[in-house]
Image 1: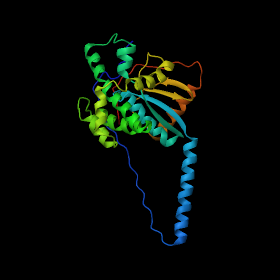
Image 2 (image 1 turned 90 degrees about the vertical axis):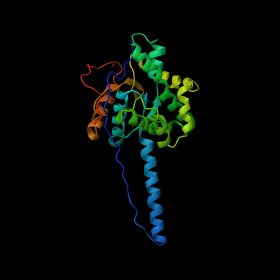
Image 3 (image 1 turned 135 degrees about the vertical axis):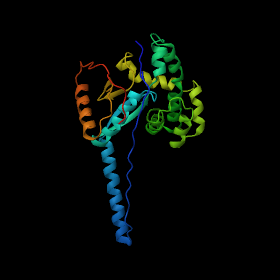
Image 4 (image 1 turned 120 degrees about the vertical axis):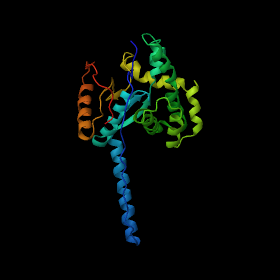
Length: 255
């Protein structure tokens, strides 16, 4: 069956808070020693925390609004649980047009899927250029424009997102190239060979088990985000667990 990611127009509103801190100027050799010791302790603590974080692979296509909501939830989870998202790419175009051969899709959706290659190709080119760590910031830059600002048909979305993340403008040309398609397919199969092709995005791997979802709206915040993560982690531990579902009765919300 085809994977239909966004049946309706969207209206999204979200923001990322910023935090600033100031340092009090200290003079003298003793003050410098104390500052260096403090910095050393902070770096050590940061390294220890980083080593203890649980990596959670998250496969996304930037065009899917439901995956976008789940991704914002995972950013909230990072704040309240010892987890770190490992952003990875998949392709709705590849899933629907190649793996499902376009079966069951309307002409409008087929046309939309043909254009869905562009953004994910740019993501693949960016990862090739700057490493996989760029995928998170680039996904946020693209997704904010597509979903929050509702600019799905705006050709300036990709150039703006590249500029925001400090990437070369030339990477935008990857949208019309097949150069990075094998990289996309390789990442895609890493998830879908395990989870199956009757689902879409997002796919998360939690403690060595790939799961589709959660599909939720709006994204839980704070401790509510952590509790949802706790429940999902428990579900993932059940070897024979396959599905929980109810029909969606509302549009994606980014409140």
